Structure formats: C-alpha cells, structure tokens
View 1 (spheres, rainbow over the protein chains, first blue to last red):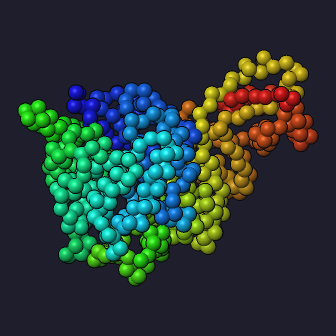
View 2 (view 1 turned 60 degrees about the vertical axis):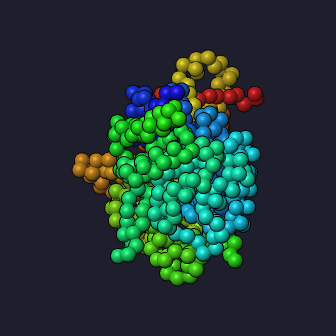
View 3 (view 1 turned 180 degrees about the vertical axis):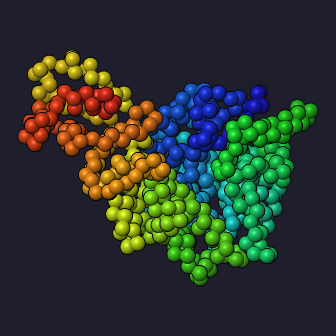
Length: 282
Length: 256
C-alpha cells in the first residue's frame, strides 16, 4: 500500500489554481460541499478538473443533521447534485446543528445528548442516506459547553447513532482533544470506546487556547495553526487502536503556502509508517 | 424536560439577542462566556460573507461603519440566512443599509449594493458556451423575423438614477477618479466571461434592446419597439455587441 495515498488535505480557495497547475503529490483532497452548491461558475469547474486527477471527499458544514426541526430537503437536493458531478469517495457531515425556525446560524453548534436527540438525529441521518443513496460519515464535534439535559456521553451517543443508522464515523482527533480538554473527559477512553470498524476517516487540525477568566481556559478549534504535539500523540494512539484510515489535515484560517500544508500533512506519515511496521512485526 | 427544538430555539435567541440570563439549559460554568465563543464565530462568519459579496459597500462607508451595519443586520433573526449555503444570502443587505438614518446622505448605497449582488450572482451562475456572431450567417431572412435569443446564465442587468459607473471606478482607483456628481442615469449589463465578471455601462437604447431580448421576445418584435422609441437605433451594432461580449448561448424560433 502506498501510505502517501492515505493522507489528504482540506482544499481551500487560495490553493485551487496552484493545485491544478502543479498537481502536487497529495493522496486526496477534501472540500466543503456548500462552497460548490451554485449551479456553476469558475470554482465548480476547477473542482471538476481537480477531480480528474485526485480522489475527492465532500465534507458538509450546513446540512444540520442535529436540527430538531429536521433537515432541509433543498440542501439535500443540492448535495446530491454535487455528489453526482464529483463522484466523491467519502461524504461527511457533523454531529451538530445550525438551523432552527427557518434561520441558519453558520457554526457547528453543540447538542444535548438525550434519547430524544438520538431518535431525531438518527431519523435525519437515515433520511439523508436514503435520499443520497449512500453512507454518510459523521464527525465528532469540538464543543465549549455541555447541556443540563444530556443523558449520555458524547462518544456513546455517536457510536449508538452510527450503529442505528449504519453511518460511519469521521473521527476528528483534534476535536476529541479539544472537547475532552474543555469538559475534563478522558481522551483515551473516548478513543477506546469507538469500534474500529465504525471509523472511515480521521481529521487533524490545529487549535488555540483562550482564557475566558483567570480560572477558565478553553481550547478552541480554530484550524489556524499546525497540529499540536499532544494531538499528534493522540493520533498515534488512535491509529494503534483503530488501524490505518484515510487521514486529512484541515487548515481554514491564516492559511499558509501549499508546501507548508503538504509538509504538515506528511507528519502523519511518520505515525502511519510506525503503525504499519508494528502491525507487520506483530 | 425541554425538547431539542426548544433548546435550539433558546440557544439561537441567546446568541442573536445576547441574552444575559436564562441559560439553565447549559450545565457548564461561565455559560455566557462559552456562548460568546459561538456568537463570535457566527457573527464573524456572517460579516465576512457580506464583505465578500459587497466589497464596494465596505469601501464606501468605511470598515468600521460597514462592520457595524453587518452586525445590526444580523441581529434581526428574519435577516439571517435561511440555507446552509451562504452564497445564497445577502440580497436584503443593500435595502437594510439604505434605511439607516445615518446613511441617508449616501442615497446611492442601495443601488450600488444591488449592483454588487448581481455581480455575485453572475459569478456563480451556470456554465454555458457562448455563440459567435457568425451563427447569424446561417439564419435565413424568414427565420431572423422569428428568432429569439437564449442568454448566458451570467447575464444580469440593472439601471440606476446614480452614477454607478463612476462610483465603481472611484472604488477601484480612489486616487485617480474624481466624482463630480452622483446623479446620473446609468445602465449596466453584467456578464461573466471565462472566470471574470465584467460590467458594461451602456447607452439607454442598447440596454433596452438587451432587456427586451432577455425577456424572450423575438428579434422582430424588439426591433419594432426600438424603432418606435429610438429611430436612430443601430441593430447591426447592437447585435455585434451582444455576441462579441459572449452573452448569447443559443437561439430559438417562435413557431418551433
């Protein structure tokens, strides 16, 4: 297996033309689905061209699978059109919500982990998968608060959700780190609770630390810097538990030059090679 | 116990109206500070989306004022996006800013905002291959009477009582353009050529001609109307213009 093919990068607007011109050695690219929802235009045409050279994964940020009012049919229709045009190897969304009462709030908002939520979100995922005719990957969120009504741990909620819907997990290791740090959860226990066969993709990204008060410091999922050493370490632990999976580096703010992104993403290769060699020796 | 939808509604109101109490649905301490993280991301994302669509408005009123306008616009729930695709959102913003008392002295802002919105729509419209004018050589005289044109999906038009052409030039080159008066009728045709959205500031007769054709009227009907209102209208020159600017992708005949 060519290990390099496991490593992908989140493709953002500033690099699209350069990628087309230089066709760098990157295993695959992931784009935000909603950035290509318009009927056409230069951005869409360029994505079609990139798809001729690389596998592409579609990562949604606006379907709002966690909405109590259900999911928007028009959003699904546009996603299906994009899937038909791009033929992505993965399609993913978030365990979060953004839409309520006809208003869309552009952020990945946290959910109370209750039996009612589990039922509603399961139905939303089943409806989406049925309409799209394919499996979805659901990403664990980074979160900054917890709800008084929650009845179960996030990881148990996520696993139950995927078992009920036959969706897979997009395991964002940085989000695990951020949420566990913010809520004093056990990171390794979080990883250990996930059956390896449920995970279809891993995300990595940088985060920052913000002091809210003298005694409250939160990790914020800013995607604006290199991956924290502690997150790399958790990534190593994760692949030792769940095996090698397509792994993506995301960088969405203060976006650096493409060669820096590629170089950062290749750090994952060290962990992947080490894990592959351990498996071989065993 | 509150339902998921009730919690999400309260969450939304807490953020948009910046409520300082009633966050019993949050169990974490420092609930307000934690909510502020989400609030900042939401307002910042919305502001950036508006600034990308309306860059000229940011120049005309200045960053601080434009940012405040964006914030005020988003504090009204009815103005928030209704879909998860932010490219769909923002067409109400020009009207909102034109209603602000402090900006009444800039009466052209609404039209300039509408102009930027049309450019935004043009940029992300569907692809289509434009036809060259040589296609007209294949049309018989009888067919010309009955033909109508299918325009490129990126073609948008607007007219204004203000000198939008000069305002656009001023925004592009603030040092080299002097704006004498903002009162002047302007007629604009917008089209995307390859990856670039181009604005053509045209004469009223040419604008009327294109506007009639864009409605799907046949060339003969449009020509008659043009002759009635503009006896000097040059049909050949106008046809060359719309083909040369890559505005036509197809045509049809009225009894087809």
